[in-house]
Length: 110
Length: 117
Image (cartoon, rainbow over all chains, first blue to last red; front, side):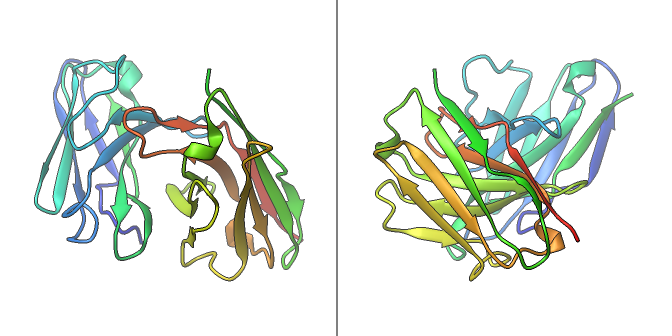
């Protein structure tokens, strides 16, 4: 059972917009930044969003993040086949004194 | 170029031990906090351990507390994870990661640990 809660799966067709939610608590999302990663198993996770809604250079603006209270979401617009991957939210937890990850959302592009 | 290269993974018996290493290059290692994150087969990412830049503070996930020990040697630019009393559920790909230094986020390619008799 992950500390941050994500839906296990999401899907969309090319060109569509999809959103992935992440629910936490006051000790993690409620008081610290949220990060989003794109991950293909067996490879290094790739940072998509940092500090709730900032994109590292090189990440397309099709990816956007938001946070409200103890929840956050990742939106992907103009869905492309190469977006098919696992997506994780993450953040620091003050009560656990450690990083916490969501359980991951497997995105399928139909 | 920042590089993190893990090593030391392999096959261990239940109750056995392994020591993972992570060699860092391309940045001032002693100035950065570091982490270990793992992914078990078919499971999600799980944070394992954090260590401060000096090595004086180490935090662990509850699942490994009392069995794993994190350390670092700043002179050798290396991070370590001593894993004792291994269990089948410790089977995973273990990543060394420099995270939280927005937006410069770096992960190694991982080293595979398999615990089986």
